[in-house]
Image (cartoon, rainbow, N blue to C red; front, side, top):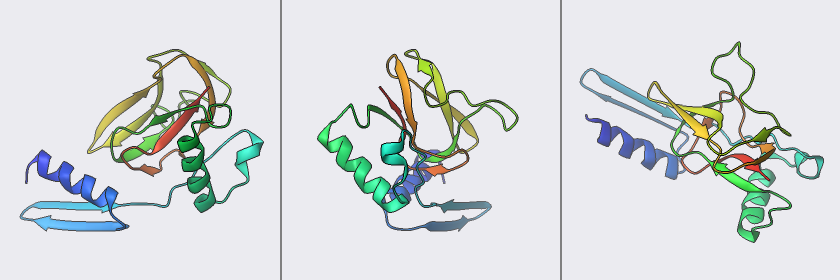
Length: 147
């Protein structure tokens, strides 16, 4: 099994309704698991939503393109585990209210033992952190809102 086949499997599982997948082929064992989306959203006008309502309302806000409510969304470029800091002992790269510059590291998505830095796509202020530290994220899942 090569890297392209593994990436195809990851993409297929992330786009499906499966919550887990296990494959054993020769000496290769591959386990993929999805956890429910959790959002930590500030300010207060959005913070009280449940996980399910959060996802639905966030999608509606994105579709409506209302930057005053949600800002520009930075999405995960791949499936993996999201981290807010370079190590468990370190401070987060950014917090809500921090000013950021284009190209500044906001977080990391770990996929297949590779750390992929997530960078700001423009200058702005972090309005919301939309994924929790250590949370499994999917391709295209919103991670940050920048206004």
